[in-house]
Image (cartoon, rainbow, N blue to C red):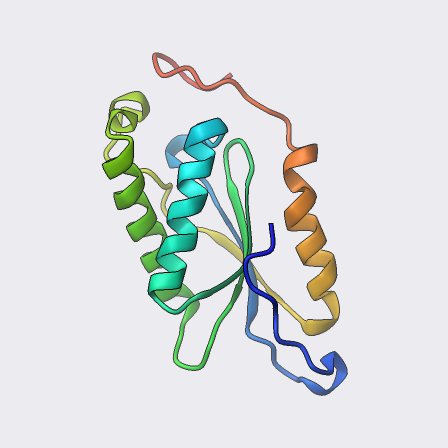
Length: 150
């Protein structure tokens, strides 16, 4: 889902574009990002980005991971941005769905770390298409709060 329109005037003339394709997972890569939990989590990530001046171009949930396309502005560093997004969203998801801490058997919502790749202006549309469509090709896993994901 498009959240913000990326600013690309002439991709061939822009040497460094501050776009990052970022992905990360819930604790223990549990398959919990479905239905209402996915909607709440996505809303909390979008809200956290908006309140902190972070441009979230795309954000989609897989069953057990998140893909985002971020546009960073001057003075924003990816580690700081990710710390804010993951921290604020986790706190707000747990506020809204407190029983999730019990189901996850943990007080952390997100796994430590994240993966990322810098995206150049020429590949921006391809990455956006990938993020939008990745859930359709992701294989669902069943979350079992009493045991492990299957």
